[in-house]
Image 1 (cartoon, rainbow over the protein chains, first blue to last red):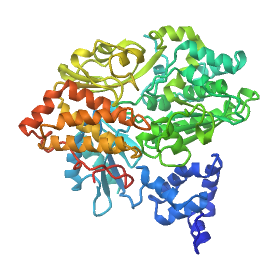
Image 2: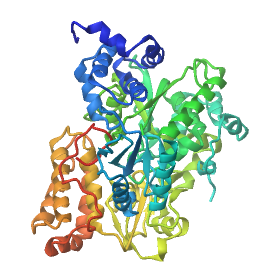
Image 3: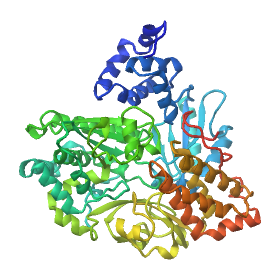
Image 4: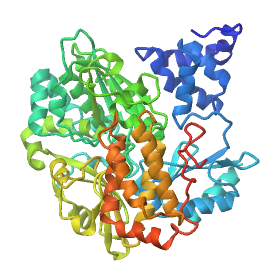
Length: 171
Length: 441
């Protein structure tokens, strides 16, 4: 069991009464507290944008597992982020069907337009570009996922220009 | 050809509860509760020759019959909606367009196996489908089709929707169980099989989305009818995900045993620009590749196995004559290197080595011994690991090297570089997990 002099305060700071209104029912759905971790972390991610070490420790106490158990999960899965995210994130698929249908060109074009390489964020935090493996949308190749949400497919340079213009207008 | 599931694949539309009921939704499940007992339900599924459509093609009825019912432990049902095999996107369509078909199938499977708690494990990237499924589940609960008294009977079924978080290995059934239990998705050694020791140490049935979605049809029209739609021992129809250099990529519902040539040229419209076909991946990325003159083959589990490949997830990826096979293999093997969980040395090291060797070849640094070295790596990546990811990596690798060897030799001999500046590589090192979505490091 993890122990520390700041045990309870860090738990309550992350798992406030308001948060627990959402997470307690999630935990209750599973046979063990540990099993709820993917959904609990996802909740924290969607609330804060990313998971800090303090949140990991608080989650460990909340679920009564070790901090290492949480660390293993956070680092194993690609959808758990440990750094602040850009406002608009492009995850471009680089697996087979997309590669056959021009993904490399799309990635190069985005690199040029955003002036960053895959794995990077623009200095103002507005955009991030990542390459990811198959998203299960090969019929619309080449494609990408925007902000871990919508799929944008049949990508062309024109479509990317339009998407970037839309994002600029919103901001 | 009659459409069963794909009848509901109307672009932009979801068949919600009201329309679904008007169409006869949940009637098959209700009739199962009325007319059959659990054992009888399993017998019907055996007769239908329904095979696991996630990729393994194991006879579904037989798998159900392995579940021990007298252990004193609860039996769980887990729905594999992780859909990670590259080239496959049909489960996404089922969930997005006809979620109630899936839910009805889940209810039938639960009844057959005495299951009162089920989990749907959906890949974390399927955000819109997740929202649709969540709403469909709420509708089903509201109607009393899920909950403490299914169809008003003394049968409880609780259903939990659970999102994955980005890991291909969690589509492997025991990797999925580990992930569902809140751990890294490290597959388990089999035996024991999940039917006996599965989720939380209890007997567990794990089925793919599409497999479950066909159950209502089996009980609506009969097991024999379903069996006859397909080929010998491969009953029914299945959803083929067709992508690549075809004119009409998409999901095509066709009988088990349909000729591959017909899928490509009759249904998917043939090759874009009417170019020549060069190669086809018949069953998801892990299937050995076919050359253009090998496509007169019938697409069912047994016949493709006889041709040293697999029907797998029915992810059909079509390459035309403009395809650089070295590039295609590089992209393929980079995927496995990235997705290997790292537990077993032959997989972790083997996929890493293959990735680095192919990257070096692709950058013009190929050596004469490379192709034989790669084939040698194949030999220790098969049958030596806890799960089949390594086997799945070795199959395409071996088939590309055997069937397109001359392209690799040309790269090595002529110091050719892949795609000019176009192919995005990552220097061949195994990609670090966790810091944002994959990316190049």
